[in-house]
Amino acid sequence: AGDRHLTGIIEKNAVRVSQIIDNVLQLSRREATRQQRIVLAEWLGGFLEEFCATAERTTDDFRVGGADELIDVHFDPSHLHQVLWNLCENALRHGRGDGGEPVELTAGRIAASGRPYLEIADRGRGIPAEESERLFEPFFTAGDAGGTGLGLFVSRELCQTNGALLQYEPRAGGGSIFRIVFADPQRWKG
Image (cartoon, rainbow, N blue to C red; front, top):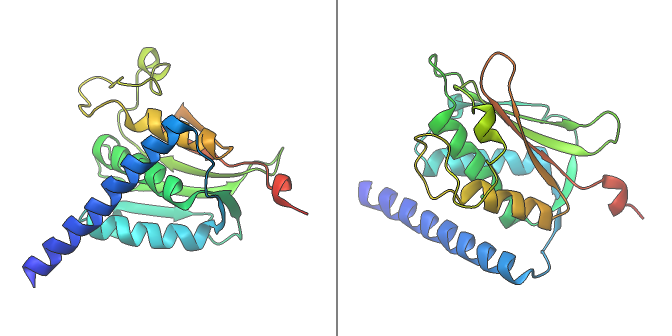
């Protein structure tokens, strides 16, 4: 049973790495995305279930807000999966704070434009202002973060390819907020 569990984790990660490679290749060729209508609350539930099982986390590591509202977005599902996986891994690695506060995932709509968004917020030490301007540069890693410095760069590029924005802002009281602002829903009506 233990071997089957480990084999399952290896298989899921192999598929995920293959998708990352495909997405990077797609980015470099600027191919058309395979956008679909995604009901954010449903998709987010399935994503968190997979993420927690694969990363050996519990749902207590996350707090989900705003997911009861019917918010649909148009995005390539594999791209959204890769972006959110990267942001959740970063938030858990660098943003749990001293008390081990959960990472907050909040869906909603921007009041002025009606554009849907998904925020990933943490209570870590945050990112120094002088480093925050370089966050989305390729090969940039903040402080002693380690990693390749490609995660946020690729995430931002995947968002832009899908007509969305990926933004960073410091969180009041400490921590970070990464916000995916999806394409204008009016663009998909009619």
